Amino acid sequence: MPVRTEEKRQTIKNSVSRGVLVAVSVLLQVGWIVWLVMRLNRYYAFISLFTGLLSLLVVLHICSERMNAAYKISWIVLILLFPVLGLCLFLMFGQESANLLMRRKFGQIDQHIVEFLPQDPDAARAMEQQDPLLANQARYLRQSAGFPVYADTRVTYYGDTCEALEAQKEALRSARRFIFMEYHAIEDSTAWRGLEEILAAKAAAGVDVRVFYDDMGSLGFLSKPFVRRLESEGIRCRVFNPLVPVLNVFMNNRDHRKITVVDGQVGFTGGYNLADEYFNLTSPYGRWKDSGVRLEGGAVRSLTVIFLEMWTATQKTPEDPRPFLVPAAVPQEAAGFVIPYADSPLDGLPTGEDVYLNMIGAARKRLYLTTPYLIIDDEMQRALVLAARRGVDVRIVTPGIPDKKVVYRVTRSFYADLATAGVRVFEYTPGFVHAKQMLMDDEAAACGTINLDYRSLYLHFENGCWFCRCPAVAAVRRDFEELFAQCTEVTDQYAGRRDRFVHGINGVLRLFGPLM
Image 1 (cartoon, one colour):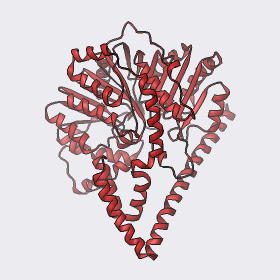
Image 2 (tube, one colour; image 1 turned 180 degrees about the horizontal axis):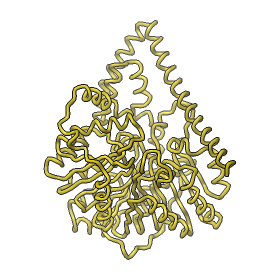
Image 3 (cartoon, helix red, strand yellow; image 1 turned 30 degrees about the horizontal axis):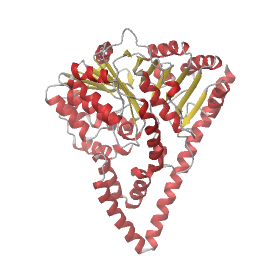
Image 4 (cartoon, helix red, strand yellow; image 1 turned 90 degrees about the vertical axis):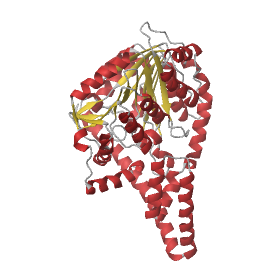
């Protein structure tokens, strides 16, 4: 055991060192570009004039672009304050065309697989008849994002990640054909080792086992020997967007999805990664609160296609999804309507944000949500405020113990405006709430990977599950009530508070919040 522990420490140390090397290398490259432009500006008047004119043109271009208004303001201020630095950063990271090659690649993949997500007309018709208001959400996800609604799926909600993990293990042990797992972060420790043991046994029995993780998300948790070990056990393993010491615009787009699919019959998704802290095996930020859902039935098909989209992105040839899209058995407990969905930073459609906005706009009695980070734009903030002002009981739960102090400060900077308008704000006293979920009127809920911050809403690959008129919605409500009992309400503390100094600091933090 001591040898294994030392080996694990060494591999993690090497992984962190690799991350530091990449960060330093990229900063040096950006710094060199900025230095070169500044030096040319100093010695060549026409270049300085050109840089000034280009900055003006870029600012005008940003004003006319179809991008989030908060992003526009952040980029414009950065360019006006630091013309050379801001201009270089925007030209490298701020334009959609900077990711043109990846946009084309994912566009081709999506065109290939979208045909495998047909809409069952009976399910769509039944939803329209039962509740036209809720059907608006389904219509949006189907017509704009391409994700169908299912009426043949059982949803089980887990407010306790330990229960979710055990259910996941049980499902993995039942696998006969294939297992797909895609996670932002995997830690080579206790929680994962219990899963890996099952995966290795299934791979030895001939099951097609695939594991997919994000390199940045798992930095400090894993190293290259991890991939080799899994491959030696018969587990196919791929790394999304590996960190390289070369300036790469796409490096800013990470895979934040969390998906497990077993035989196309059972699927899991939610906010938790496969690391010990998510199951309170370690407690770096107090008690960890997260959530997830289990799907059984037809809706698992969408999770399978979402996984294959990302897996195909790492392949030279497209993956044929047909062998994995087998008809799912319809459980007797199937009820309500379910829509698993995904969000991509490359398609120009903020699906995750739109799902939240639709729910906020449709709420009539109550709207509860949890998020680890609250960095929102004016549109989202106004939607929450309008809901509260029309009499909806709007409640937001954020962490009591932060994992990122600067981001936590930005999160708190939004409290005053929301609380003054009647939104109730709670902080999870025991520790860190990482769950990303929303409840609307005890009728519909969403659970997934999408935080209420700019990175989740605009820069990351995300996924979620929206469901209504099923027992899982009531389970989400019960979990919220238990959660409120463990929280400290800070609404009165922030409502109407306008300390000039604090307000000024918050203004600066919020100004550059979209770029964090």
